[in-house]
Image (tube, rainbow, N blue to C red; front, side):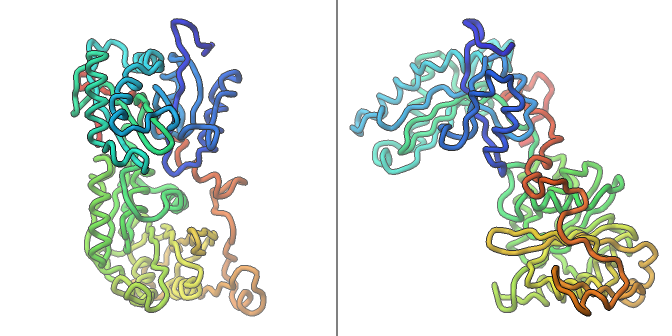
Length: 456
């Protein structure tokens, strides 16, 4: 029934997300919980942090099925700053007592026990963060974690283990107050929160989804891979494919290698990164099942290089090389700033790559467009011999423009608007769709004896 009882106490659960608005996570949680408990869901100003709800300890295992959260915690205490002493000398002693004797421990430990039955002894570690100005002079993050760890060890008798603790206690002290929670659930091998920089993950996912089905063992190539965001997303979505990324910018390759190292082995083992020219790829004709590329947006002179020579070759030469290595019927999904769309359309037409869809995709203050293209079947020989296809050149008029620009050719019209797989929710759907098929979360602590290899 999910109703709290004396033996099944009510727990305040906190759900954290990455690249997902709290309102969407709250909506999923409301739909997941029975009506009486759904009324307790809070987010935004109504919540201390993240998305919170009140439910019995026995509900903890069922929350693992939620798709949008990255982690779930049990809140032990959440104290406003007004309840903490101003005297610098009194801060740490007060915090030791407040944390060790917090009334939320029995309920939080009951929820932890639901997920980790049969633990003969408990070990713990404290992850502490101090931010803000109020306590800056009196305590640092390391000192805070050490003091509170000592208090919990004394009060509960738990063994300190900084390597593989069965309990992870998270403490946050800032100008708003003190927040203590106990980790319950997490994603075992998610790529979320692991990589840094690069393309927005939901835009990268949308581009990958626009590739359609890929054959097992198919090679996905990004000739200007930057920080490798697109390729990592592609390998996450297509577990039987491999990928290769190239770039001439050393700084970009270094960032890509760092991201490559950070992702789980199931993804990292299938990715190769190389320094290479996008106009001279080391592949035979038709070797790639699909191509992804976030093309340079920069206008001439910005950031030290020009659009037509970025990453080592002209735009036209790079597009022709993409067509050469792409298998007939394969798709290339590209992202380009709107100011650079006219030369891109011209390059696509010259190379014989058929544009199927143009999807406006603002990136902050930058107006950009996702372009879904396909290499026509039977076009490979003409492209390899001459660098241009025998298909009629395509001339695209900008959206809303009439006249000769849209009537000089009989090629199929390009769809402008939604991507082929998009529903009525448009871009707001991407967040939910990207994560709807993820495996359930796992208990925070996985004992080595259970044979589960943790990917870090």
